[in-house]
Amino acid sequence: MADIISIKNKLEEAKLKKAKQARYKKVLGAGRVMVETFCDFRCEKCHAPVDESVLIKDESERHLRVPYIFCDHCATEYVEYIEYLKGNCDPDKYWHNESWLDVWSKWITYQGSLDYYFKTGEFIQLLEELKDAGADQ
Image 1: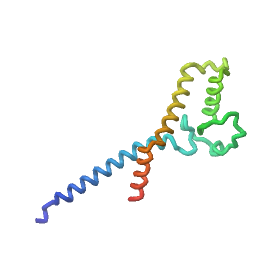
Image 2 (image 1 turned 60 degrees about the vertical axis):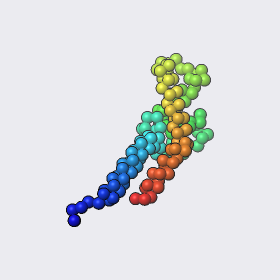
Image 3 (image 1 turned 120 degrees about the vertical axis):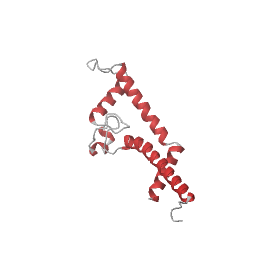
Protein backbone atom coordinates (compact mmCIF):
# COMPACT_ATOMS: atom_id res chain seq x y z
CA MET A 1 0.00 0.00 0.00
CA ALA A 2 2.93 2.37 0.50
CA ASP A 3 3.39 2.57 -3.28
CA ILE A 4 -0.06 4.07 -3.89
CA ILE A 5 0.14 7.68 -5.06
CA SER A 6 -2.67 10.00 -4.12
CA ILE A 7 -4.40 11.43 -7.20
CA LYS A 8 -5.58 14.36 -5.10
CA ASN A 9 -1.99 15.24 -4.15
CA LYS A 10 -0.79 14.86 -7.75
CA LEU A 11 -3.56 17.14 -9.03
CA GLU A 12 -2.74 19.73 -6.37
CA GLU A 13 0.97 19.57 -7.25
CA ALA A 14 0.16 19.99 -10.96
CA LYS A 15 -2.11 22.94 -10.19
CA LEU A 16 0.59 24.63 -8.08
CA LYS A 17 3.19 24.01 -10.77
CA LYS A 18 0.93 25.51 -13.44
CA ALA A 19 0.24 28.57 -11.26
CA LYS A 20 3.97 28.99 -10.62
CA GLN A 21 4.69 28.82 -14.37
CA ALA A 22 1.96 31.39 -15.10
CA ARG A 23 3.36 33.73 -12.43
CA TYR A 24 6.86 33.25 -13.89
CA LYS A 25 5.60 34.22 -17.37
CA LYS A 26 3.95 37.32 -15.90
CA VAL A 27 7.17 38.29 -14.14
CA LEU A 28 9.16 37.81 -17.33
CA GLY A 29 6.74 39.85 -19.43
CA ALA A 30 6.36 42.69 -16.96
CA GLY A 31 10.01 42.53 -16.01
CA ARG A 32 11.25 43.11 -19.54
CA VAL A 33 9.03 46.13 -19.99
CA MET A 34 9.86 47.56 -16.59
CA VAL A 35 13.62 46.99 -16.79
CA GLU A 36 13.79 48.66 -20.17
CA THR A 37 11.63 51.51 -18.97
CA PHE A 38 12.59 52.17 -15.38
CA CYS A 39 16.33 51.50 -15.32
CA ASP A 40 17.78 53.94 -12.82
CA PHE A 41 20.53 56.17 -14.09
CA ARG A 42 20.30 54.97 -17.68
CA CYS A 43 19.41 56.96 -20.77
CA GLU A 44 15.83 56.16 -21.74
CA LYS A 45 16.72 56.15 -25.43
CA CYS A 46 20.11 54.45 -25.77
CA HIS A 47 20.37 52.89 -22.26
CA ALA A 48 23.85 54.32 -21.72
CA PRO A 49 24.75 55.03 -18.10
CA VAL A 50 23.74 58.53 -16.99
CA ASP A 51 25.51 60.46 -14.28
CA GLU A 52 23.21 60.90 -11.27
CA SER A 53 23.92 64.63 -11.26
CA VAL A 54 22.06 64.93 -14.58
CA LEU A 55 18.89 63.77 -12.85
CA ILE A 56 18.93 66.53 -10.24
CA LYS A 57 19.82 69.47 -12.45
CA ASP A 58 17.89 72.63 -11.79
CA GLU A 59 15.31 73.19 -14.53
CA SER A 60 16.65 76.74 -15.00
CA GLU A 61 19.94 75.26 -16.23
CA ARG A 62 18.24 73.65 -19.19
CA HIS A 63 17.44 75.41 -22.43
CA LEU A 64 14.35 73.29 -22.84
CA ARG A 65 12.40 71.15 -20.45
CA VAL A 66 13.32 67.61 -21.47
CA PRO A 67 10.72 65.14 -20.16
CA TYR A 68 13.03 62.12 -20.36
CA ILE A 69 16.22 60.94 -18.71
CA PHE A 70 18.85 61.22 -21.42
CA CYS A 71 22.59 60.93 -21.70
CA ASP A 72 24.25 64.10 -22.97
CA HIS A 73 24.24 62.87 -26.57
CA CYS A 74 20.55 61.92 -26.64
CA ALA A 75 19.57 65.13 -24.81
CA THR A 76 21.37 67.16 -27.48
CA GLU A 77 19.68 65.15 -30.24
CA TYR A 78 16.27 65.61 -28.58
CA VAL A 79 16.72 69.38 -28.35
CA GLU A 80 17.85 69.42 -31.99
CA TYR A 81 14.76 67.38 -32.93
CA ILE A 82 12.47 69.90 -31.19
CA GLU A 83 14.29 72.79 -32.85
CA TYR A 84 14.00 71.06 -36.23
CA LEU A 85 10.24 70.71 -35.73
CA LYS A 86 10.10 74.45 -35.05
CA GLY A 87 11.79 75.08 -38.40
CA ASN A 88 15.26 75.80 -37.00
CA CYS A 89 17.20 73.46 -39.25
CA ASP A 90 20.99 73.39 -39.31
CA PRO A 91 22.08 72.60 -42.89
CA ASP A 92 25.47 71.40 -41.60
CA LYS A 93 23.68 68.54 -39.84
CA TYR A 94 22.89 66.65 -43.03
CA TRP A 95 21.91 63.54 -41.05
CA HIS A 96 18.86 65.40 -39.76
CA ASN A 97 16.71 64.03 -42.54
CA GLU A 98 13.24 62.49 -42.84
CA SER A 99 14.45 59.15 -41.46
CA TRP A 100 16.01 60.87 -38.44
CA LEU A 101 12.73 62.70 -37.82
CA ASP A 102 10.84 59.43 -38.18
CA VAL A 103 13.06 57.68 -35.61
CA TRP A 104 12.50 60.42 -33.03
CA SER A 105 8.81 60.69 -33.75
CA LYS A 106 8.28 56.95 -33.37
CA TRP A 107 10.41 56.79 -30.22
CA ILE A 108 8.36 59.56 -28.60
CA THR A 109 5.13 57.86 -29.67
CA TYR A 110 6.42 54.61 -28.17
CA GLN A 111 7.20 56.37 -24.87
CA GLY A 112 3.67 57.77 -24.82
CA SER A 113 2.27 54.29 -25.46
CA LEU A 114 4.29 52.90 -22.55
CA ASP A 115 3.07 55.67 -20.25
CA TYR A 116 -0.51 54.93 -21.27
CA TYR A 117 -0.04 51.18 -20.80
CA PHE A 118 1.45 51.59 -17.32
CA LYS A 119 -1.69 53.49 -16.27
CA THR A 120 -4.14 50.81 -17.45
CA GLY A 121 -6.06 48.85 -14.87
CA GLU A 122 -4.71 45.56 -16.23
CA PHE A 123 -1.07 46.56 -15.80
CA ILE A 124 -1.76 47.93 -12.32
CA GLN A 125 -3.48 44.64 -11.50
CA LEU A 126 -0.43 42.73 -12.77
CA LEU A 127 1.86 44.79 -10.54
CA GLU A 128 -0.38 44.10 -7.55
CA GLU A 129 -0.38 40.36 -8.31
CA LEU A 130 3.40 40.35 -8.60
CA LYS A 131 3.73 42.33 -5.37
CA ASP A 132 1.37 39.91 -3.60
CA ALA A 133 3.25 36.92 -5.05
CA GLY A 134 6.52 38.38 -3.79
CA ALA A 135 5.04 38.81 -0.32
CA ASP A 136 3.93 35.18 -0.34
CA GLN A 137 7.47 33.90 -0.82
